[in-house]
Length: 376
Image (cartoon, rainbow, N blue to C red; front, side, top):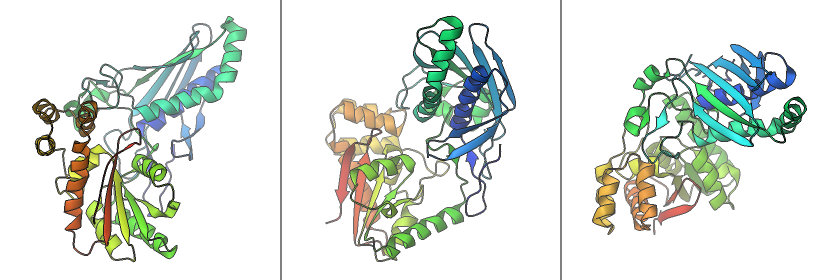
């Protein structure tokens, strides 16, 4: 499995979610073709194709039909603890429609709210689930015909089990336990690729993207903290051209200063609760290794905004920033989100030589705008 190379000569890697997606496709193809799969190609969540080489591939079409595939995760040039881990996918075809997910050895489970999955669910995140479901859907007509001819089933679905040998030990190198993901790793990835965290290279790419926008005569930039926030911002601010949107990752302060050096009239910072809860404290670089969510700060902000004592206490004891946001939303207290935006705006407005106008756009995890603040 050869990972691609970015323009700074640093090799990007693949997520556990992309590896699991490739495993599902390989399993299904091995059953349909009646032969082990050595290599498989998938379309990643970002729309790019990626080829994976399988370590193992077996199948049993007798009944119930099942298949097994594994591959070695390539983390690229900035690998995390899962680099080199074996990602194992097992599927079983069943005469019930749909795709169901199960955790095998080394994959964790959700023990606390606020992680985008129900408590008790396998720690297989929503985007990887969607990618695996898409692989099944793409092959569904063939699978349905195959299973009907062989077993007489009127419909077909699959049970998917993901395993990572030694995953429980590897998880000790992560924040999973603190977040409430127990007994293993998470299956992650909203893009399918892992971009090497090179400070100089990433900052250079931000500056270059701004130069492209200026060359096109763009006066308003939308700085987003990642791919998901960019997608949401593009829908909300649909009148802006694609070049106006710049993914800045964790480099918020740097990006505000860089925009101020150019003929940019307005910058809109768009993001979700995780990064914004850190920016609201005055942090200018939000990489997970250098900053954590301050729940005492968030609860104080809620109290200052007029939240009830019960909500203030619930936010103080929240599991994640997303969980804190969900608690505020469930309580019907939008002032909390507005306060976060205003606090970020306060800190950004104090950055020397920033752009003339700054806006702060906060969305929920469905892409709905839940807070906005802007300089006068």
